[in-house]
Every structure is written in structure tokens, then in C-alpha cells.
Length: 157
Image 1 (spheres, helix red, strand yellow):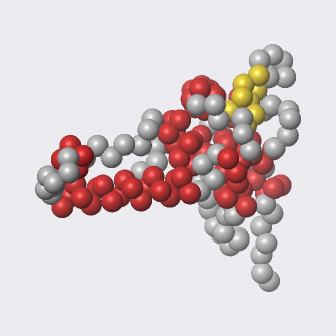
Image 2: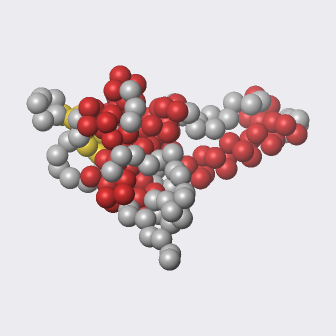
């Protein structure tokens, strides 16, 4: 449902949201922490800069920072920066009032509306506030190197 590109973008945005400082993180630093290809990450960061979700800085201490506070960045913003506007292009008949459409196209239209609604409702700040299950055996694709420094696991003994 969400592409690898969007997933990497969300992970990068989470890391930048956690850092929350005034010092940009370089693509090299992000790549190491996210354990991903620097060239692929550079492409993703470029999309986020173009969408004005990140600010880019050149030079020896260059890198990227969030362009807005985490509470002002929705998952929809991030996904659409990577994939384009989410359009449910299932059936032209859906756009014409009074024209009957098949059940499949009605179902896909509902799925589209629900997806867009959920992505628009969740902000980066929401994800940062509730990062991961507290189970010591939980795995999460959104984690990155150094995650534990921000969210130490609590275990019951």
C-alpha cells in the first residue's frame, strides 16, 4: 500500500523530528542511521525538499532539517511528496452524477477515501508521541540506529 520510497521518507522525517535541533543532518549521517543506500536516500530527500517538507543546506555542515514543526506535517504530505497526489482513479463513472458504477469501483472509492483520511489525520508529531509497542520482542520497520536513545524499551519483570 505504501511504497518503499514513502516508507523511507517517513523514517527520515521521524529521525529529523526526533533530532529537532537547528543543526542539519547530512545525507551520509541519515543514511548510516537509517541503514539505507545514500543515493536512494538522496533521491527521497530531494522529493521532500521539493515538496517543502525539508529545508536543504549546502556546505561542509550542510544537510536537511524539517521545514515545519512535526505537528504541521501529515503522513499524507510525506506520501504525496513521494508518490504524487493520491487519486482514486478507478472509474470515470464515479465522477458523473447519476451514472451507475460496479460494486468493485464503489469499494475502491471507499478504500481511497479511507486511506487519504487516515494519512491526513496522522501527523509526524503523533508518530513521535507513540513510537512503538513496549514489548521487548516487538519489531518495527520505522526504527533506525540509535532509536533506543529516544525511546528506551520498558520491560516488565
